[in-house]
Length: 245
Ligand code: ADE
Image (cartoon, rainbow, N blue to C red; front, side, top):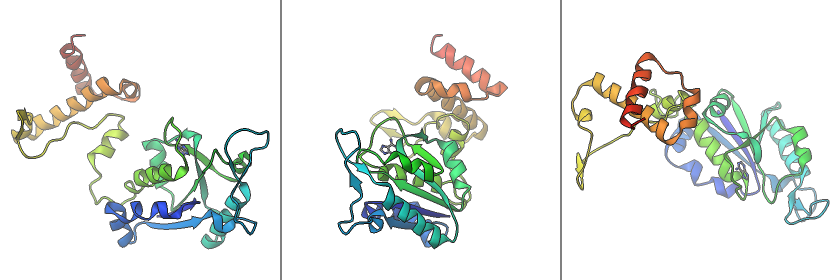
């Protein structure tokens, strides 16, 4: 899978895309990154990429033409028109489902906005607008890295054969169950004894119930989307009793 990133700050991507899982996937040819400097496509000799907002107001607005130039360059590089996504705080909200959809593409192009926003007319040229959350970053670069990380781990081969249970649990809209490793006791904090029992069925049941408990306590909104089995419904009743409800 190829990620193309259109940015005014290419160096922001150097270290994050050269470490850990992503680095290994690049070395194995599963992922490829194409970083395009939008400034190279500015039209004037000063390489201007921002300008004052029409109508006045604070801050600068990112110009359309350098981004369009960079998009045309990518189309020529790839020999076709790829799917273009703009990172912006007013895009649709990124989620595990959006990540799964993107992971099915061969080529994802992420356009990082900067300054106080991008000239609205960019919307006529792009296919999707994504926000990673209800807060304002100083640019789309950090958001693009979040998207790349979440999408890359869904690409077959990036995290090995076995998809981690964390992705599985989010697919089901449950939070991950608590995990423990050695030592067995830290400052009187013990690992739950069931995890040391070797009884796989009891461990499975405990983990399932703790996933549900954590979701009820921390993200009750996710429970609306959760389809509970008969066993899950029993766990929910037990948890509610334990919580004194
Ligand atoms: N650019 C600035 N803030 C952003 C956000 N929350 N998501 C995506 N891109 C952004």
